[in-house]
Length: 268
Ligand SMILES: [Zn+2]
Image (cartoon, rainbow, N blue to C red; front, side):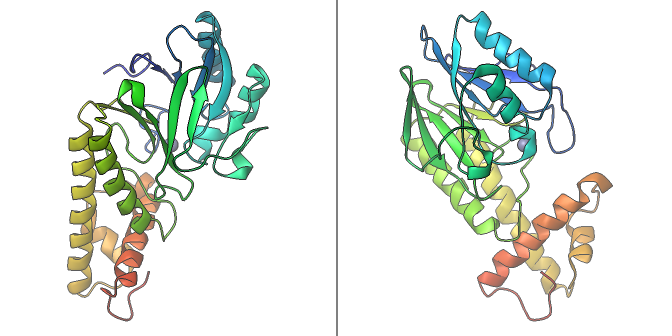
């Protein structure tokens, strides 16, 4: 499965060589460009890996184009740590929801349409993975850049204990948006592109709903700590992703607690 170089007419992927349990094959840096235009938008420069960042800049240059702006899908370092160096390389500002992630750039608002040398990009707020997560809709390609809200394979983790409710809302929102804009391709922050967006979203939604059922079951069976619940719900988990699982379980407990579904005395 080739990720580097894949994409749509207006979006091409440069894969950063930072594979890992949380980054899958590595971070996907996306180069967006209206055919024939000179101005280019880069999404998620990636971690501070100078060879990768220089390769992205060179790829743009070889297209006879120029980076007009960089956007980030969310604040995590594997998407943003290279922003400053990339901005130095290209002279282009970095726009982000989180003010701390901007480099000479502005914010991103839900519903905002960015016109970059004829390329139209609609910002879709999708909090959950992080509270500043956004997706970018490329209407002309019926494509959606999903950051870490939807990954090329596996499922995403939710950062923070209050993220599940917004995340579920974001999944249902994207499910409707995929229909409305006839989205045919998802371009994720990690992993390969997805060509069955509705099926991908359904499986994300089903996964979360069935996990919530398991948590309800664990609590119903009398388990009271996060560690006990992890052992029951994720019996084969490897140590390296256990903190992520703990975060996910806490988020689910909070989600159930907010809905009045948790008895007293449950650690969350
Ligand atoms: Zn990531």
